[in-house]
Image 1 (cartoon, rainbow, N blue to C red):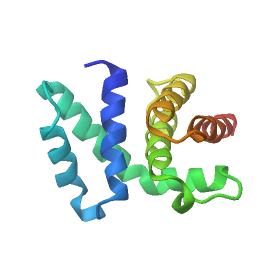
Image 2 (image 1 turned 30 degrees about the vertical axis):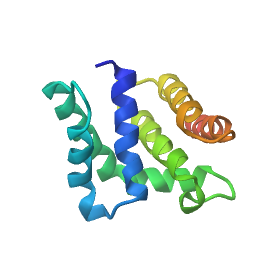
Image 3 (image 1 turned 90 degrees about the vertical axis):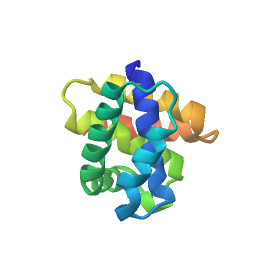
Image 4 (image 1 turned 180 degrees about the vertical axis):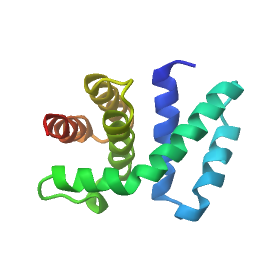
Length: 133
C-alpha cells in the first residue's frame, strides 16, 4: 500500500477519537482495520504501531496546536481538521524520515478530500506556522 494510502487510513483511525472514549480506541482501531479490504499484514502492523505512537503523543501534539493556533483551541477545531493536524504534527515533530513539506502537503490534500471548504487553508496555515517555529 502506498504511503499516501497508509496516511489516509491513519487519519481515519485518529478521526475515531471524535466518537469514542480513549479506553476504546485500540479496539476501534482494530475494528476499523478489519474492514479495510486487501490489507496486507505488514500494512496492518504498520498502521497499528503508528496509531499507538500518535495516540501516545496526542497530549504533546495538542499542546503544540493550541500554542500555534492563535485564538483557537483544539476543542474548537472541526473533528476532521483536528485528526488531519494530529497526524501531520506527529510526522513533522516525531518522524525524522518525513520532511515537513511532505507532511504539510499530504495534510492539505487530506483536508481537500475530507474537510470543509476552509479546511485546506486552515490546515496549511497551522502547519506552516508550526514549521516556522
